[in-house]
Image 1 (cartoon, rainbow, N blue to C red):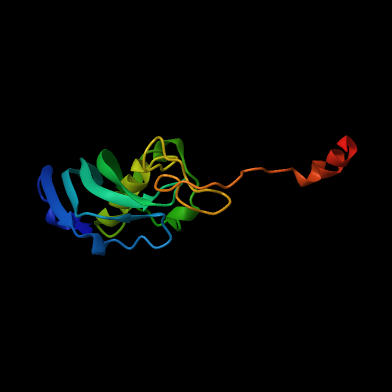
Image 2: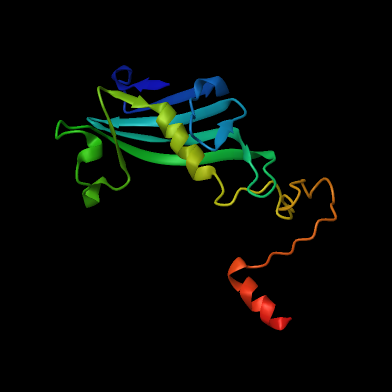
Length: 171
């Protein structure tokens, strides 16, 4: 999933690629790629500066925050990224970030990692609170059934153990 910049001779070139879900190693992430990923972008190269403008479309799958059932999240995200060559001022993650570096990504050896670009777009497309539907009822805290599919007769009575002593005074 690497984009070799040495192959681009003109000012503007088109990149259109499709990646299967198996190409993505998202170990440690809370989601997975559930459909082929379509990447269409325009590469504008001006000396060492590279601007990548395009869209990424796919479907992600993650667990609902209430009922833990997997659900699909459609992704159709546009991006406009500026890439500059990484300098030998030390590792990029140990450099001081300047105001001019905000919104800039760095590439090394005339290669841009499209996998990292797509992963970043996936993370930006994820909802803050993932819900399978807005009215999801979640899991029963007592017996653990999915309240969207079944009902239970459990009592949800919770007594704060710090105040249990005060309950004795009422008797």
